Amino acid sequence: MADIKSKNVYWHDGVISKEDRERLHKHKGICLWYTGLSGSGKSTIARKVEEKLYERGISTYVLDGDNVRHGLNKNLGFSHEDRTENIRRIGEVSKLFADSGILVMTAFISPYRSDRDMVRESFPVGDFVEVFVDATIETCENRDVKGLYKKARAGEIKEFTGISAPYESPDSPELTINTTEDDDINRNADKVIKFLLENSYIAEKNGLATAE
Image 1 (cartoon, rainbow, N blue to C red):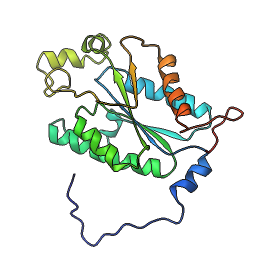
Image 2: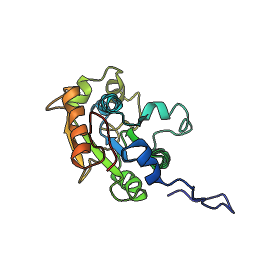
Image 3: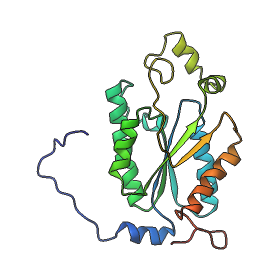
């Protein structure tokens, strides 16, 4: 956890609560945290889920690993320490989205179990949903359109997750999607939608989400 360097700062509660915003949006404000190796399908699934949720009237947003490193986290590299800070910052941004009543999704490798647990612990119980996008290293390499694994094996990319840096898979994710066994994007996205419905994060009435 990063130290607070600013002095004389105080938390100010707003007049409008998270529950008020959820009633306005007609669904829960939570974080779906996709984790898995590069090439496992995290961003692809998250984008398809976003599309399907939008069609249902759900207010959602995807925070993608590469996109965030273009701005908010452009000063961070890929050392263990920088990866931890990368995830800490994204966790804080995700909390703000969830507090606003948005269903926010993050698509980050987030290789260290302790970093993901740190983010989970910062959320109210039930507001952090870990989605493990499971795929073998062989599957990910075969999908490697950017050639990152090839460069990592050649030593051109240092500290590359799965090759020269570790990936610690979740112990007890809320949902696991194995894209080696089934890489159909619509079926995998529907698994996420089904989870959200079955756990009352969203509900359906005349095709639209309704508040619980």
